[in-house]
Amino acid sequence: MHNVWTIAKKEYKSFFHTPIAYVIGVVVFLVLGIYFWLQLNYAIQYQSFIPEISSLLDLLLFPMFFISVPVLTMRTLADENRAGTLELIMTAPVRDWELIIGKWAGTYLFFLTIIASTWIYPLILNLLVDPGIDQTLLIANYLGLCLFSSALTAIGVFVSSLYKNQIAALLTSLGVIILLWIISSPAQFMTGFGADLLNYLSITNHYYETFRSGIIDVKDIIYYLSLTFLALFLATRAVEARRWK
Amino acid sequence: MINVTGLTKVYGTNKAIENLTFNAEKGEILGFLGPNGAGKTTTMRVLTGFLPPTSGKVTIGGFDIIEESIKARRLIGYLPETVPLYPDVRVAEYLKFMADLHHVSDVDKKVDLILAKVGMQERSNSFIHKLSKGMRQRVGLAQALIHDPQVLILDEPTIGLDPAQIKEVRDIIKEIGQNHTVLLSTHILSEAQQICDRVLIINKGHIVAEDSPEHLQNRLSGARRVTISSPGNAQEAVELLRLKLDYSHPVIIDENTLQFENHPDQDLRSDVIRLLVKNNIEFSEIFSESINLEEIFLQLTREESSTLPQVSNVTTLPVEKE
Image 1 (tube, chains in turn yellow, red):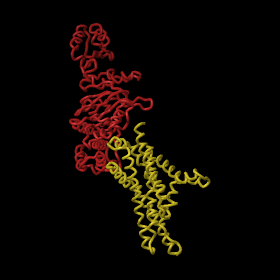
Image 2 (cartoon, helix red, strand yellow):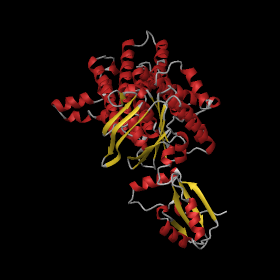
Image 3 (tube, chains in turn yellow, red):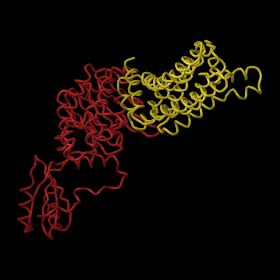
Image 4 (cartoon, helix red, strand yellow):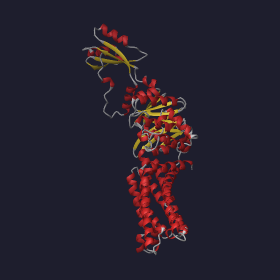
């Protein structure tokens, strides 16, 4: 665990060595802030309109995380591989899985930081509306968002472990995420097992159909956790395979 | 400390190294000498556990690099040829990271100590991308030393440095070599001669020679080469020597110059001079020089690669006259 923490810490700090983290931070606050402000104004004009955090978080998930996860994960392993620093880590007394978990954890922590910082909007909204906002819905939304981004980050780390070139990693992980995002679309023309399977594989169904409306279902938690686990497992195997080339 | 038996590494169909067997003891600086592409880096990558061997066995301090990889890797400090560093990180921060990976206790103190050792205390707060090549090399070396490893593996540690920096790095290595096992690769002979206790010459994946630098130097049929300047008479002199002193193996260089090899245990110089004087062959200069490791190296590696075009040999170069 010591090594996981060492690598995660370094990874987390590394986001602040480049402007990318700040740019993402500023964009998130600007976009969410403006949208939030618009919602409040709308609510003042039209009494029937109720501002909601769920739609604010929709914006965070898509397009914010949809784009920034591939962008921030692309360098995790591909860049170490290109720069040769992977050779140093892999010859240090560090197990391959410790490296992968550390890389994922450091990146995930950065996304958790962004997610945590958006708490300011429900806090404000809670002060403005009477009798306050639906806490269960809020918790379900945030839990779902955390699980969703955990899986996205793990996919990004896995794809990055396959490449030396960051751009190739970016495009591939974007492709994989898009595929998982839209995979359930053909299901509407299908019936039976095929449709069930596609619906189950869809990374969006497990959020939008449950967490988004305040339902916390173990089945969805298991889906995101196993997707995370699977991606990290494959990433570990990819790094191991590098030794055998 | 380092035991290598029958080590072979094959990439696809290309045998990078074949059946290497050697070992290095504590307090020994072992030089790995060979031209580029000889298999030095591959060997080091296998030794550090980065690449698995196709066959053969490597143990570091008694631990198998594959079976007990983590235990073996704990003992190794490694500086790859490319000196991989994180450009966006400060020197001290980078060293702390590497120290943490090696579970070093009292990290801050250790980082200060190691920075002092490589003469980089003043740059501890600099970003790595702002450092010169020589400084990066020193940071790389510091990284390899941070956990006080019993075995130090350095791949071309002085490549790309200026002469002053080369001397500094060599001095650091020599100091470390007193109580650590050091394996370093180089394609510079004088470097191996200066730093190493023992040299392995490797070419095309094979060990072609293994000895102390001094012994290697004496290995060629004679330790010294004698050059005689005899303007216009070289041809005649060589013919005479071949007739009367056949075992001197005279070689004609040009119409003014001839050479022969002189064994330390069989000094031919006075015989040759006497013969030339007796036969009225005039000569203006005679001098002897040691045949250096450079030529032994060329000869050893050329034997291995007889299909390659012959590189211009030092012995065919015109002899400088004063």
